[in-house]
Image (cartoon, rainbow, N blue to C red; front, side, top):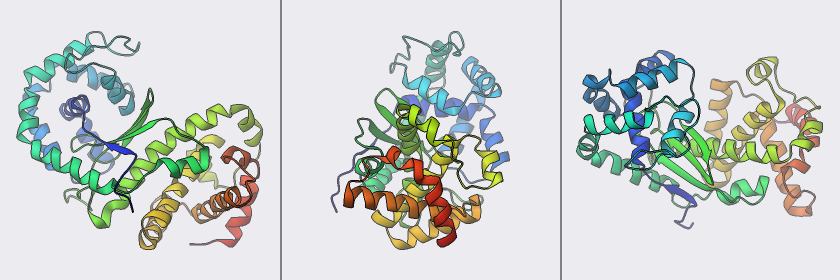
Length: 334
């Protein structure tokens, strides 16, 4: 297998800056209340290091944004719109607090974050190297293209050993798909695993596929909105609980597709053991009893697409997807 990957691994000081701001808010405590977990040593050190700066204006502004329900994706995308190291923004969104960029600059210099990052530089370098190891020889572009056609966007995976510590976030910014991901969580209070830990590689692949796939599929379905209006008239055969959690046809299909995409990738590009383990975890933790059927139907699409050129991309197959899934559910079981 080639050691090349079309996933770009990089660090960005703007991302590290926003992570540090989060560390000084009450976000870490709230995240632990929702999901108790062990955190990386750098995240804990950052929170301690910034104790004296929790009253800084940018921390208060960010806390207000969090209290108003501002998604983390919006905060991280915002800082990537700023220049570095000037932290200036040309066209600020209307929701950005007045003077937020200047307050970020002051926080960066006043808290001497560069000193902290240099002190823990080896930890960041290790995370970057681990992520590079994890994705070496694991291209994703052709994998997604098999479903939705040619992909122009670049895919950037940013390992983050600060905050958030328990889940990945991601977004599209211009022509770039960005996944910001913590290292794989261990059980309970244990520290997280390295990104390239052989028994935990699934977590890095899942994070990348979920983030990149969500953004790619969202744009793809938007381009085919007229067709989707007709397609979505046919309900998906999912439980009432699933429908309550994902209230639109698009949200339901996206969730099913992404879970199945991870499974298919693991089986085809990693190994059978990781594939089976993932299926069992999805069923146990997320109640995805429908997943084997979704995998079966998507594999049928790929087979017919390749063998008979019956379909060019997924949108042509979606009208029969609900019916095929109903049949598959009666046949396929984990």
